[in-house]
Amino acid sequence: MKEYADIENEHSIYGLPWNPSSEYPDGELYVTVTGTDDKGFSLTSEPETITVKH
Image (cartoon, rainbow, N blue to C red):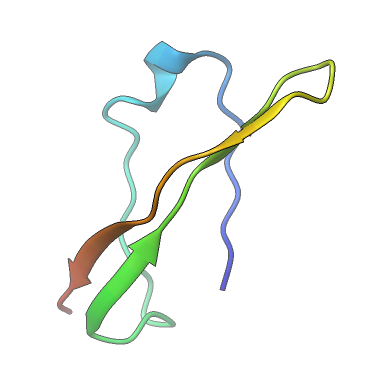
């Protein structure tokens, strides 16, 4: 399952609200972030683990 968000700059990602919908099962999820600039340069983060509990 993938979700997308448009981030204008690096400062706007801090405090970005995200609450898992009921589509996400309880348990551990792995999250990566990919950023691409207007010239096509792309970076992807290392996976981070989050725990979801509804």
